[in-house]
Length: 501
Ligand SMILES: [Zn+2]
Image (cartoon, rainbow, N blue to C red):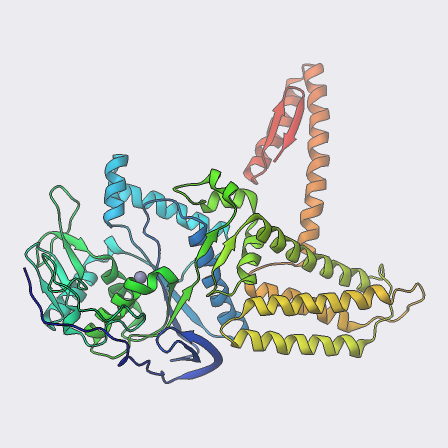
């Protein structure tokens, strides 16, 4: 049992160190200063970004989806709007208490279980059209790096081995705790194996028959917080531009990551910018019937909602804001998206002469300039995508009213500014990861018609084959079905009739 003198945690002394480097012109919310501060990266051609990855013990849910889609949107803005070369790293927690518990109840090994849910996680991210990180690091594949990080903390006197064969970070030996979040000013009490209740495990001594790794402190496995510090430091070094995750990770996970990394690197600041996405809440109780552990899995959400509609919903709420998941909100997002494709269609109809209107080029040109400036102001203001969506909606409404109020059959001139407006809308959405390219949507529309014709034709031929008992014809029909299957199109024969999906 440890006893310890009074430790008072207060935020008073904590200061954010403004980094040196390239000022991007963006202002970003900083949880240490609680204000928006200039976003300065060490090197615009090598911006380092670490995201806390999943603990792969279960299916990911829509809360994870909103976090990863929102972070993907910010990464795309940095890359494609601000032209920064962002390198992204993510960890996969493939050993943890929850994984061990679930593997035991499922009677599979921890590695089998982790592999299964990691595969599912990547499938979910792909379905959400989230770019995969440039580099992925799994805990079980990097044990030596993690143990080495812990060893250095023990050598520095910032961590200690306890009677339970675990190693704890000594919060009392570190001056800057409670930097990211105020955790109250009470004196922490000691607990059975720890000097202070606030101390957290870097290495967890193994319980009997538990999967474990050898270490200088006995058999065990890493604590959750240390893996991110060790893996991120290993690949990105002792100073990181951005470290991101959901708001629930700010304390204790990110606080502990910052504490142990500063202690390890002997620096006052490890991460220059912490980005936290707001929570997603369920509003529609009916949705709960499809629940998976009281929430909705990503794959079941994507049965009802397309990835671009969900992304639009994420764009419509600020990344730091709480987002409410409801049918109404998704219907609104879907309408906004539809409004954009209709607008781009309208502009193309105008260009092709189907929609004739007298358009003043200067008026529309002025609208485009104002909108582009407004978009820039919104994006440099802490990635305010909801403001960008509002700006695009206003532009569309203004240009639509010009197109419809000035319709005439006698018009022989065309305003190139209409195409400029259409481009501004599609380019901006492309930056955010939503493709509203008109040609593509038209190909998709035709594709459905072509498939209907092909399916009907095959059905007729097959019926002839059945009536005439012509084996060759039936074999040809099967061949078409199998060839289409390779393209992801399924044809099903129901007696004499056929359908496709
Ligand atoms: Zn982490």
